[in-house]
Length: 287
Image (spheres, rainbow, N blue to C red):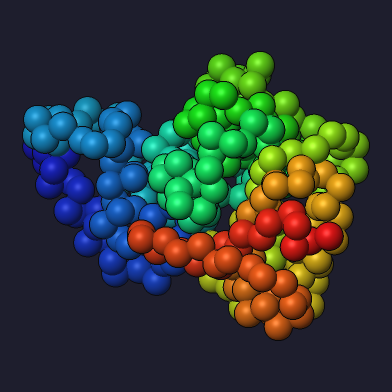
């Protein structure tokens, strides 16, 4: 006789715990990963109703879960690529290996209305550079209905995924997707430019856990010191920012290098729920 979903959750957690897996693509530990697997296979949403956890799975669901667990353990492929589901700002996004798996701490910033760092009421036009799955631009559009948003990416394949998510969230009229290498093909000025560009130095990338090898390398690696794209964004942003505009840029592991190389008054945003390396700088300091 099959176990109840609640018991299966504990079993999956225990099995995952024994393996040398890396968590950090939407989950932080074996327990989170077990929950994400169970939610996917049993088509449940978070937060989970305890009554649903008392149900018995069908034989088909049992087989699906075992298959998912085996794939995760033996291939080390990140779970969102196996399920084609990732969560960002509590919204569900379609993802595959054309895009990075959403995990930026910028999600917390959006959930907190960008407070106290940006007065969102004074922001009307937003540009996101390197949108990938579209998670940041689309979450902004859902949270702030008054915004006009342009989202770019150099990757045609990434934009295909962003388009899937834009359509699923019925935001085609609010979020404009453009194929662009940073600021090329763009015109006009924005109140806010936001970007989570590639920022991993090659040497760091080569020593990352296996899970990262499944992600598009171009969306992660940024030369020898991680600054290839950040440098270009800082240099090229001014003409695209209104006078009182703001640039928010994620520098991640390259944060120390950014501080060392650029003598600019960055404000480093603090996060309550983990994450760091997101800088804010006003247009007037970029001139």
